[in-house]
Length: 266
Image 1 (cartoon, helix red, strand yellow):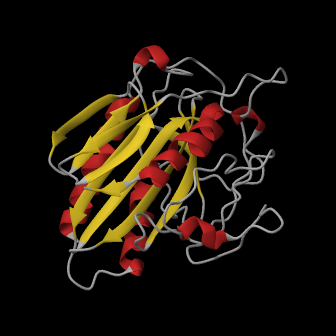
Image 2 (spheres, rainbow, N blue to C red; image 1 turned 135 degrees about the vertical axis):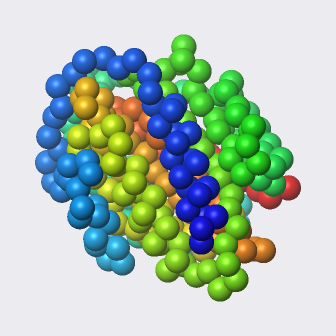
């Protein structure tokens, strides 16, 4: 358990360093329908862990399809209203400030390439041309080049693997995920909102994830997701995505889904 905490702290440090870039001045906006908590609040934003309400599911949707081998690469993880449509998590409506202006911008298009994280023993597909940092044994980081940056905030995908004790359960994983998500909002954010923890496999193994929305002190809106799973041989794999709020649907629908769909062990 101590090693898990150490690895998560290391991952958190990497993400914070990636986000420390010049930001545009902007006024923070309120997000209706989502309970906000000031940074550093003693009350955890994940006090509702364990609830399984599902909102915005399309008619005829079969959540078991997500868990099968050869997971299809789907387009449209969110509805037009910005509600998460996968089963398991309480949906977080996207505030209008996260959405494009009335003159809708074109959806982002991506060219994908294969990445191999040899030290973690995994391979997957993600956006081509990202900067790779595999200098640490248990952490693999993909960072969007600054010339591709939107809203002065680079997209970062962080993969990490850590050892756990024998008998480590999904409940233990949820507790670690809850702590990690809460800690993310304690630094550089004036507002922080997190979904309930939802169960979802990764590499066919039991796992869970949360999504979040934060407003930094200069008004920059950040959205992200943390997905963890218990692998064989007492290991935990974590994938953390963070990116600019307005572009969340592009990266959640296309890139994160692509990573999860193509993720394989070496």
